[in-house]
Amino acid sequence: MPRRTIDITLPDLSGRRVLVTGASDGMGLVMAGRLAAAGAELVLPVRNRLKGETALAVIRAAAPSATVVLRGLDLSSLESVAALGETLRREGDPIHILINNAGVMTPPSRQTTADGFEVQFGTNHLGHFALVAELLPLLQAGRARVTSQISVAARSGRINWDDVNWERSYDGMRAYSQSKIAFGLFGLELDRRSTAGGWGITSVLSHPGVAPTNLLAARPELGRGRDTPQVRAIRWLSAHGVLAGTVASAGLPALLAATSPDVAGGSLVSPRGLGRTSGAPAEQRLYPTLRSPEEAARVWELSERLTRTSLTV
Image (cartoon, rainbow, N blue to C red; front, side):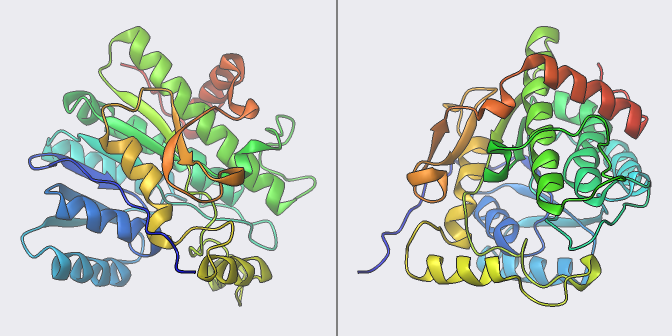
């Protein structure tokens, strides 16, 4: 039986400046292509310039009139994040949509960022936290929608408050869950603080469900020389339309969250199928791990301290 095509219609995004992290391949590249086709002016911050140039060619082949610029960004380096922020603030163009999509997942052994943080916590959460802090004036100017991509892994686990950098006992999956829980709590707290302070920013969460993206594929730079058994199983499930989406469908929740005014701030958009692993995107109830404002405020304060930034207006 053929897989049923799942899609959404994007609004006209002409005149809207959109920044997407992690858009040099996979789901991020698919999202960037859809946004460009809808008329958005794209800013693609990439760690690997060659991959970025290849992504640029793919987007322009599909949308020849697209306005796309590459910028350098390594989310595992706060210096790199600050440099991008300085560049974009100097340019002065408001940002209307920010999709925090980039991430790393379960390196086989503990690794650290340039600043000494456990690499998943430092990249998935702290890097994006610092990016939002750096871009805050531009996000305000654009009355932006900020979409933070979490994961089904955020439905369980907790923040390891006594050892957030997993220095004493590393568990790759638990560390990944922590990074996505922290990131989700931050996204919700951003919406609360924006609403209370009149910042003009709407913050929402999304997650892609389960799809054959590159997160679990071979990543030599993370110490993973070959595809994991998990990603091989996900590819089979996706090909057979069983409990897994496609790379294209996995990007739809973030696209819906980022572009639809009907999605309220503080919401989570994910696939609505069994276990939220696949299916059409829709607003879903927050996971219990994300429902505590007190935990969210604690994450915010810890993140400001660790990144040495102040995310305030």
